[in-house]
Amino acid sequence: PTRNRFCFNAFMSASGKIRVFCRIRPVNRSEAAQGGAVVVAKLDDYSVTVETQRGPREFQFDKVFSTEASQEDLFQDVNRLMQSVIDGYNVCIFAYGQTGSGKTFTMVGDKDQKNPGIMPRSFNAIFDIMRENGSKFDFKVSAYMLELYNDRLQDLLVSQAGEAHAQTQPHGPTRRVEIKRNRKGVVFAQGAETKEASSAQELYALFQQACANRHISATKMNVESSRSHLIVGIMVESRNLTNGSVNTGKLSLVDLAGSERAAKTGAKDHQLKEANSINKSLSALGDVISALSAELPHVPYRNSKLTQVMQDSLGGNAKTLMIVNISPSEYNLDETLTSLVYATRVKAITNNAQRNVDSKEIAQLKEVIMKLKSGHAVEEVDV
Ligand SMILES: Nc1ncnc2c1ncn2[C@@H]1O[C@H](COP(=O)(O)OP(=O)(O)OP(=O)(O)O)[C@@H](O)[C@H]1O
Image 1 (cartoon, helix red, strand yellow):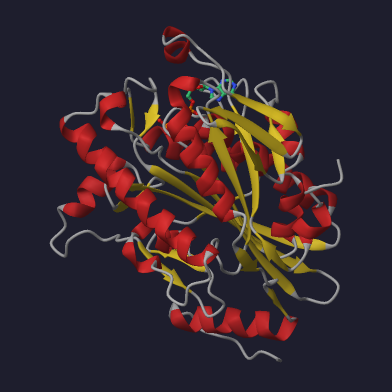
Image 2 (spheres, rainbow, N blue to C red):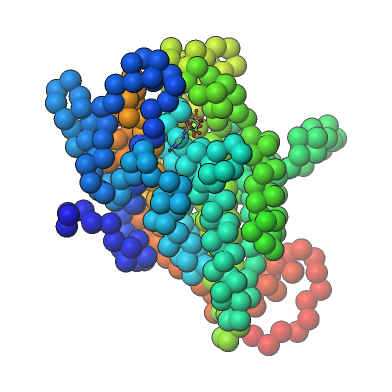
């Protein structure tokens, strides 16, 4: 019981390894139709065993969640990261796994939201912490929501009609989303619509709008398969009312599209194009993970937009949690082993998370610069 014990203090520390949770989903209908033989089991809270043809193989993680674990159980172990966001850290939580393994269920929840996932729960948790600290801090929350579809970044907070109109304008599309990094290495989406939210409900309404705009379709492996990577960025600015300092934290929540084999999913035509694009970006992610875990001098972040989006979360300035979603069935054994090996490599990656905090003077100067940049008159300031 003492080995590999998950430790929140380590999670909260300024730097450290990427944390990896493993979640096993229940057997589904298509697996049951194939016989439903179960080959994956949780051994204890930190290990999972897989029955292979060559005998059992064991994998260790920071936490393992069995088929019985509820969304609430999982979020209890994720929740502490929300305080880090308020404290001015960049936090990234992402789900990885083959198609139909439970990534969207884990990150977003089920369709009728009877079992909300990490994203909606995070919105509530952030606003709960802000409410508790309302007498000491002044908070500002804003968000962008994007999808990476066929290697194109699309803004999910801009209505399809608005985008179509922009495309027909004489000067071309008004909005082109590009991934940039600031001086501290923090990724931001230039050109993306960033909307403020003053309550968890407002943030959730934006999220619902984004989910409705996302590309989803039915494949043989999943009736509601995500055909894109969903990227939600929540920025939280907290101004200390006593000393005027400002913390700026960012929470990145990523629901990756699932890796898939065309033979199993029955993908044809445009679905095959989507699958190729998904597999290409996931393979670029794999290359980045291999390079980081082997501590190679060159890390190929630039090979895909997905790895550019996730650059600060992998080997960068962020506290990162990966959830590897797996199926328990023999039918998916090969994909499960691949995901577990992949996730084991991620555990070896070291990040260097730094708090983004500005003194009162720096925060005031930044405000002045922002005003000047946007052409506003600036009064004399005492800095
Ligand atoms: N832990 C779980 N408990 C109950 N149902 C689950 C669980 N995980 C997944 N499911 C169900 O399994 C189905 C597939 O899950 P989901 O859509 O989340 O997979 P995915 O990994 O996001 O797939 P894709 O990559 O194709 O988008 C859904 O109907 C979902 O509700």
